[in-house]
Image (cartoon, rainbow, N blue to C red; front, side, top):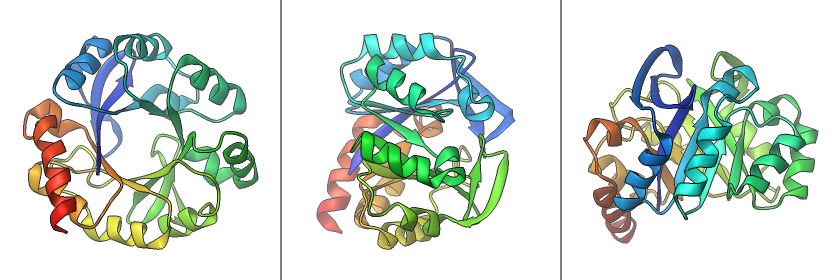
Length: 243
């Protein structure tokens, strides 16, 4: 199981939100490139970047921060937040990102998203952010009537790199993962599913590995010190072996 340390960017700084609430923000650093180097030094093989300004407003205030991260590390980096047109897709991929996470536009314009998946095979990730099983969009400010698994099934036959499935209620709360929801999503589609939201300790990682998730994203736990990357990587391997 892959371990994806998260770097959430807002106004060029590294932050974490609680349950996606922009008014419940903690700033963990003003040098995203230094944070990226730290995670790599601690054993990260992948990085999950989130442009929170882009997710909410559709325009990025973090291009310089992303560029600095890409210049600082030599591992695959994915980015989500505000990716809503092909110009943005091409620009970010040309900048050196490994793949891009798209959520809002995939829900609102499914034909467009299907076309993009075919134009950029294995370079796009479907981002599904859910509150009580319902898909949230626009930086989690709006919750739709569409179920998370139904949205995933819409695109199950497209050449997606993965699905990132985030439980908003768990995100940033340091209370463990929503394991039943993650298992339900994994069993709904054949696309690799990366779990996000609530990963707090080594046991959370082991549990996700045991149900054979393709990966998990770890955010606040790393910044708060309740989980180390090296321990997460080891737990991912052990959990998968013993499932």
